[in-house]
Image (spheres, one colour):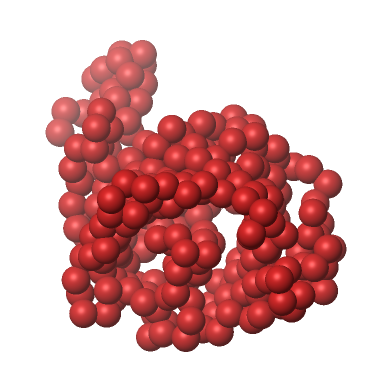
Length: 269
């Protein structure tokens, strides 16, 4: 290596900046498991501090013949600094599902708490751990797909870097720690610059490729937080798909814990 002692100060500074910018993303001494975990941890760190947000959501269900049904939802999310986030999904349309609400208290190391309010029955139903691989309201999203994935609930292995559109993505495998998960493993594509998820492949307990989630139309909020405007979950076994279109994101509203209680589910508006 050429010594910087003989270089002019300006050239030395430029060389340092260039070397830092060109440094490899992963240490050569790190194992694939360590690299995969570091990517997940860095992604979570990028998300910290958003506080809360509300959004509108359109859910389009398509069967294998292309026939569609459409639903309108409202979503509220509250960040919990030392645990998983709290989320509330409320259906507004069509009339047969109006008022149906799903409340999630996510946890980093233990099973999430999930409750579903069914207005036709006027009762709150707890979603057990063994049922979280089931379909959420007939969609191709399972109950366990609906919360931000806690880093602690998976083991990781970095696989490779590869192009994804105009970007370069890291490709990592994560394996659920929970034996009741409906998945044996998931393969995740994240762009290297912003650590946004662009694709997730889900493999069932027999290791068959069950579903693929693709994300797009990202926008940045508060100059920090990226949110996908569209998510498409395709079921390769049934030919069905579900498209979630997000809009009207509002961050750092007046939400608090009182908006995310089980007793308040029946009054969700």
